[in-house]
Length: 132
View (cartoon, rainbow, N blue to C red):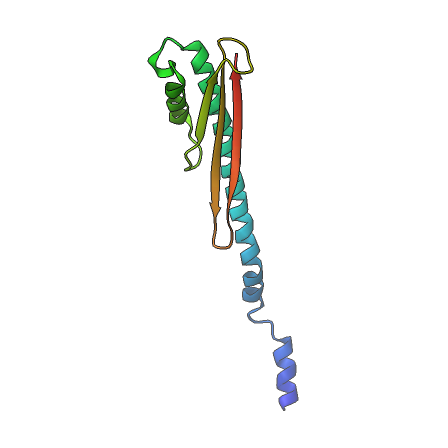
């Protein structure tokens, strides 16, 4: 009789879906979180580059405006138009470097922290723009 019960236990498929779901759930959640963080990182890099380009252009085109009159004002302008993930980037505007006289070169760096339950790391981002 015990032999017959063991055969039935091995062939019983109740609960198989729950076990398969538990096996697939963790990799699926990791994949979704990875896609989310990758998307935020790409967005952060794109907005960092855009802010550096706009700040370099502002220094040349709107030099008479108090908004972009010197390096400190240009840095504040770049920070005001950066809309990336919750990090505070560092902008470094330099006049007449590399592009010719009257130009502005703006370099930017930021670090995006990635914190999940399993992984805690950070990704460095950088951008550079020169105008004209």
